[in-house]
Length: 415
Image (cartoon, rainbow, N blue to C red):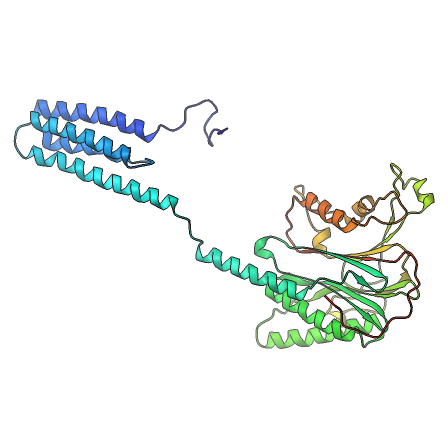
């Protein structure tokens, strides 16, 4: 049902149609021109006014029929007016303007109608933006290939949510590798957006894929990535191709399947969340609701996070690591700040830890198999299906029991 326009009260008449204006103008023009031409013999002056209704009839006309019909009527009136006027000049001065205006109006309506039926072409700027977005999407997929569903005894799930179309490319990064030292994982976020952030993220992932199989500790891996990133950014700054303030927040993780424990090394990144499945006793306690057990959610905080990568020499990195048990059947959720900083219409950030416990409720002792999908849907409902920043979620599930043998020799990560 059509609604009243802005500034128009409901129930008030809308704008007057063009055909009604043409009819009224026709009657007034004919009467005035005929009367003045008859009384004062001024047909040469008022006769050309008969072309005005034809021009009005062409405003908003869906086809040239209306201006042609109005032109024929005005031409008949011009003939009548010339018959009552004196002099042969009136026969030329009055009908000619009417015929000319009728022809031009009908032509304009025809061309306008044809233009409306033609398929609009994409503006060059919009086409260029679409091409750049498509290429950027391909680059993003090449940079972040799908992680394997299983690495050793661990199950991995990933959700990547891109921001608006014009900001599709971001610096979120993640990678996993099975090494002689354990299963190692990195999740990070390069500062900024665009191709610069993608290039920085690619640098970090490239170095991690190499050093993850070579160094003994996560601290040494972070130091190697930091040094390599600093060298590459310094080289880029020398050529004026990279900004000075680039850095990468990241959390490096090592999981030892034989010992059933994990080690975290945090470089200024949001701490991961550890989910421990609820026990039978917890279902009888305050943690249960409607017979469903809520797993406990713990933020894995290190004593003192290290500075972001490329800025490690600026701070103390001695307390940036932490080792703790990885409970069987539990899970470790990594995320970027695009998740926790996602705001709703009231400008409230998404409360991931609080929502995670509720979304992970299950009628059994384990975790929901569709947990990550539920978190994604809940996040999109919170923001209204629009994100201002890229968001990445990586869920690592532990087996029901730890019994995996010692880590195998280093092997490439299969996409």
